[in-house]
Each structure stands twice: as C-alpha cells, then as structure tokens.
Amino acid sequence: MQAIDLFAHGVDINIAARLLKVSRKTLRAYYLDFRDRLSAPEFSRWHRANAALVQITNAEEIALIKAAMLELLAECHAQDTCYRNYRAGRRASPICKSCPLHGKFTGPEQDSEAAAQMNHLRAFYHALNIYAEEDRDPVSLLRARLIHMVTLATVAQHSRRLVSGQFDPRQKTFLSFGTFREALVRHLLEHE
Image (cartoon, rainbow, N blue to C red; front, side):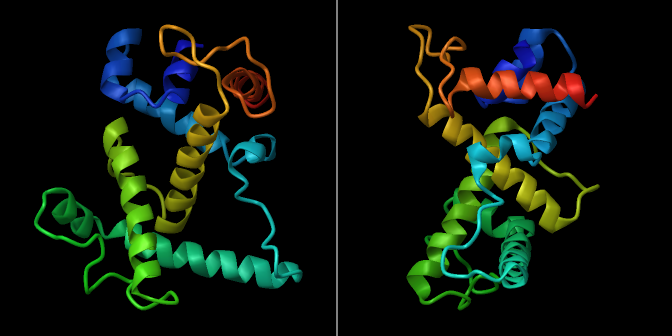
C-alpha cells in the first residue's frame, strides 16, 4: 500500500526505496509494474489515451493517426541527447535541427510545443530516477510513460490534500487519489 502511495505521489524511487527499506531495483520493478497496469481499461478515466479523435469517425483512421503520432513522438523521445543539452543550458530551444518533430506540425511554434512536451516527460522520469528501459520498444515505452505522467497529473489535480501535503485517501470522487488507489489495489489483487 505504501509503494502505491509513493508511486501515486511521484516520489523518486531512491527516496521511496529508503522509506520502504527495500532495494532501489525492487522499488523500480514495483513502479514499472504499477505503470504498466495503467493501460488497462479500468484506468482510462485518468488518462483518456483510448479516447476517440473528435473530428474523425472511422476507427481505422483513428488507429492509423494515433499510431503515426506515437511513432513520431517515440522517435523524438528516444533521442535523449537533445534533452540533456537543453537541460544543461547548451541549447536555447527545446527542439534541435535533427529532431524528427522539426517541420511535422503546422508551424515552428507547434514543433517546439511537441518537443517541450517530450522534455516534460523526460523531466518527469528524470525526477523519478528511472532512466533506460532497453527491453521496451520506443513506441510502447512512450505510450506507457505518457499514460503514467498524465494519470498522476490527473490524480493530483483532482485530489484533496491533507495538512501533511499527501493526497487524502478517504476522498473517493471520480478522479481522486482515493479512487485511483482502490482501483490499483483491486487490479493488483485480480491480476497478479
């Protein structure tokens, strides 16, 4: 239960491992297991990754568009050097000339927005202290990481905080921490 709470609060795995008195490797495995469960249908209310595109009604077109977009973003996400240079202050713009996002959207502003979103995702995983995951293909890794980040942001946005700063587990509204925690525990029990 404590590992779920730390996961939902986005606590760095090194800190969480010390708090729970387990190894970093064990806690990383817990976090990745919890994260991978978020793509199950019962968690879609928190991330909406399976939502339809409003202007397109053909299911095949929706699948093709989402797959192409994820592939493009995954190519960017896999090129970590741009982000490291940007974070270190060696680059003024979040997008570099070799970026696969360059020129793919309606203008340079949208290219930069997409690159900035990839950098937010990288920063989120940097803060968690989770880096390479060589055993995953870039598209499924990006999808899992996006779902993870959006889910935790949604939980945080819709949850009341206690005086301690932690989310209130007694609040059971539609998108709150209490509801999310219950859903994750239920999923762990039903799908070992």
